[in-house]
Image 1 (tube, rainbow, N blue to C red):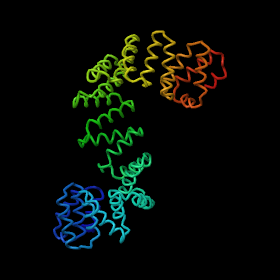
Image 2 (image 1 turned 90 degrees about the vertical axis):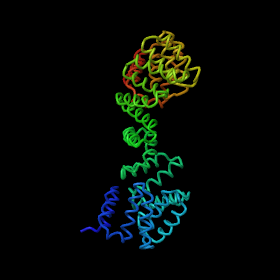
Image 3 (image 1 turned 30 degrees about the horizontal axis):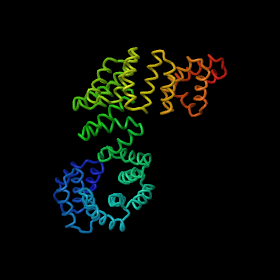
Image 4 (image 1 turned 120 degrees about the vertical axis):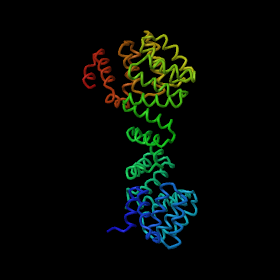
Amino acid sequence: MESIQIRMQKLVDKDEYEEAIHILNQSPLEHSNASVLSIASYAYLQLSEIDKARKFVSKALSIDNNNTLAKLTLAKIKLRISDNDEAYRITNELFKNTNDIDVIATHSTALRVTNRLPECVKLCNNELKNYPNNVILNINKGIIELSKGNVQSALVSLRIAYQEKPHLSQIWQILLKLSYQNHDFDLSIELSHKLVDQGKDVLENLKIMANCYYEKKQINKAVFTYKKIIKMDAMIPSVWNNLGLMYHSQSKIKHAIECYNKSLEIEEDYVPALNGLGMSYLDQNNPKKALRVLNEAIELDKKNPDVCNNIARAYFASGDLENAFKYYQVALTIDPKKIITIENFVSLLVQLYDENKKNELLKLLNDKSYEVFLFKSPRLTILLAIYYWNNQEFKKSKQH
């Protein structure tokens, strides 16, 4: 039969802290066992009951002042209350006399929080060779890598920690930020839900959640989430604008216009909403009205490639191909890799027969960096085929 100590340790390892404490409370004879009391202290610490954690570890040390587990638990309490120098003193002493991975991992934290970063990195790298999935080592390495600007390395380490201990809430926010930046929208949604449920940075995390749903083309969920944000705070222009974008993607143009206007009521010079409003008027076949608001937007932000692209679209729709050509060139100068602008520009050039304009197209296409877009954009491939067909360049048409 397993001892009380082993049973409690197994429960703690599974984050079942209350059950571990319950077992101790049912076993009064174990209250003289320093290791058992130390496990109970750690369980109370994880439940944020600091006073009880201190009480139990003090009792454990009074029974056995040299008990490694008790000293280690005391160091963890010191880290929790930010008595970092004392935590380092304790772990450094233990580290010299044991190869226990829990001691090593806790010492790595003490090294990090006392700014002994080179020592911490060296320790983490050495020990991760033997314990690649250790949560604490991966967290400490991830945090240091992030501070050095090594985002991908940080993300790898923190993902491992999360996979091992998904309930470790202290890494949720930083991992959410990194996963969102790296377009891991599934993990971002999962983490944002957890943080919202905990009541942490609810508005910001709901925004991330909604954006992720949009990126995953789950528009109804995105709309629901933005409406939830608006119920909490109806005075955020970006939220109304993004809700407008959701409606726009569903071709609910009237609803989109209402949202863009609401955004502009809150902040009259909000460029994204002016741009969205211009797009909506274009979709209503009203290029003159579109140009009016888009010109307002470009005066506020002259280097906005999206606004330039939509101004070009508006000129194109109104039959002013020269100005359309001009603004597509401006848009591509600002952001030469934006696929929608390239598609629209080629669409315009297909309809032009001026030799100078053709040369502009060929100059664009001869840049090999654009070859990658052919695999991402069926529309662009078709447009190029039409262009070459019109110019009797059959071989190139077949190639594309």
